[in-house]
Image 1 (spheres, helix red, strand yellow):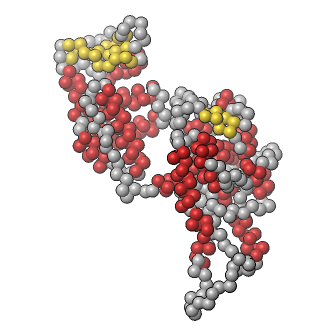
Image 2 (image 1 turned 90 degrees about the horizontal axis):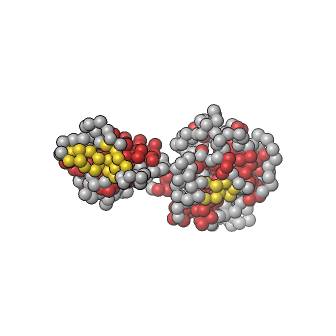
Image 3 (image 1 turned 120 degrees about the vertical axis):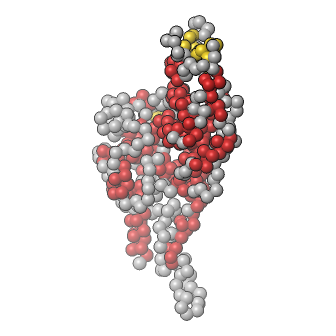
Length: 428
């Protein structure tokens, strides 16, 4: 496809192959800029590259910021997930940084190190920005704009960074789960319970279609809205009782299982409208993200909050983790809080297990663990009470509750506060 003088041209090469190359005249010679591309991608590259007087300027004059635009377009066409987030990272951390104005062919390792030292924010944020830059520069190497990737061995220092376990501070205890559901409007409770019981990633839930629903199971397709799932493969997620019930209360006659208010698909990266208000109303005194419902699901299954303790392999498969190593961090979180669980298990003074105290010097009376005994139980000792049926029956606006002890009676039925008060009254 010939173009006007002064611009690059796109032509099918060889004829009938369906693959195209982009050519431009530089230094009096016709040079191939890119080849073996789909026609749409070749046209975009032709728009990005203009004819210049010599081949050196053709390559050295292309800045990293300019290259990034075409690089991100190609990622989107290839079906890379979270492309919107990638564009935001590139724009804020590369294009607006001094490194974005440097010619891409002149980049050296010291430029990448200087860029790294200018980065702020959390460790994971900096790692993601570096990984994106590394992938972009590797593509530049493949397109012969760079001899080698200067970001290949660059690392982000983890010293002084927050622990990876702090990412799990948004896990909801059984009592907090009940409080949250009480704060959520009835029309939105199925949406929240489904996310909590399946542990689906937000995008997986928003892209769920009626055709993905099966008998007591759903299928997370290989192509979710045209983009492959994070695990890279289809997976079947079997539904527990609450998730089945929630799915039965989902909207009908729409192209999406969990549509937005106007019937369209919900926007990725955004929690349902009112999410922060619900968390505030539930009186949970820390930041809770929508993604923390996924963390809560994994922790609840491993801890046995919902009736049966699952193995690491079972939780790994249910949540679609890439390996058991990813799942193990939830087990480490449980081990970290074991001390608080023991401290929160309070025995009344009348208990026969409380042996007579030994004689102590005057002025040193009382339990040395009195301050610990007042701490709340987090993972063990969650009492079951007669409030179970009331809480579960009031979770949804209509219908009967399935009598599934593994999913309902031990699922969201824990009412720590009520159980603790009952224990104090019983033991005087």
